[in-house]
Image (cartoon, rainbow, N blue to C red; front, top):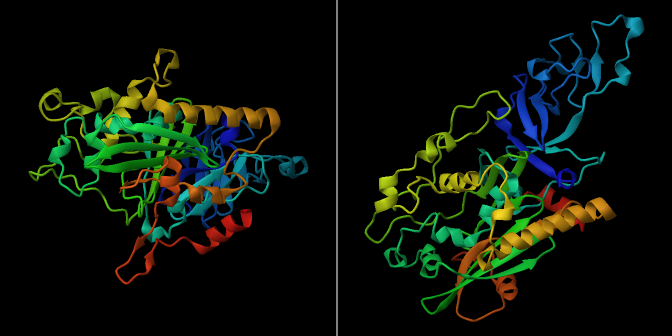
Length: 432
């Protein structure tokens, strides 16, 4: 699976985390200890933290014009890992042309720094995920570390029935005002699921009958670690979330969403906001250690600040915050969940199918060299979409997904659609 992951671009850091001429930062990606830095001219470098000379950490290096200089013996490397200077070696013994630090290709788009750790000299195009193609002023993103395996974090995003319990188990559907689509997800907390294998990964449709109409929630998984949660109007919902493996037991969660997404109202009919139904997160101060970035203040050490009295009287979990509830539960499974103790059923169909899809893709790549989905056909991601809607006519779930409009008509009759960056669309079109 690690080799499969290396075929893709990985979102690794926020642009503002690397300052031109500033201190390098420690990055942990796919189990590798790396440093990221931006040299004084603005060029980005991501490389093995070990100096090729004596393996001293380049985290302690000097960020200088042209590259980073090891603090141990002064060897200097540019952002591509080429050795520029060996100042402790007499000129007649200099062999800088034979030395190269392990470095990876880097791209920057819309406030995100992406890293390609694969073998290609010419990397594939960046993924054509709809939110990632928005102009930077229309994009919202952040980072949050989760202390568990990437897949069990991801699986929480494709498990649709947990919403009616973990997040909204104490809310009565009749207490949600008419017009708020969240109401329909609570009318029936055991939806009928349909799941399909797709060109980009997998897709589920959760079907309920509500107020005499058919309520659908659709959400995809896209290779290698992307999800799109369905909590939003299908015709204008643009969001994607990455579950980037730092190592086997730590994950960096990176959501990208359109600022124009209309948030669902949280108020009940009585005007109150349900206990625990907040969206903010409190972070610990970042530190410079390998796991020091973007850690929550609510964590395992303080039981995610669970309030048992609130849980007994007002909230299903007693934990404040939608994301924190997800994080606490998935981390409670252990660093790597022991699947021998699971008993999966109909509500887990999307989890089951996604595991199979990942395993088959990894084996196909390993045994037959089949390039995994989305690497050489990034335009396929543009077919993946999430959201919910109500319809009157019974349809097959794939027909409902394919025929539901993904745009909204403006009052003057024009179609409104958040703009994609033209150059990235051309890249996607060329890949066809």
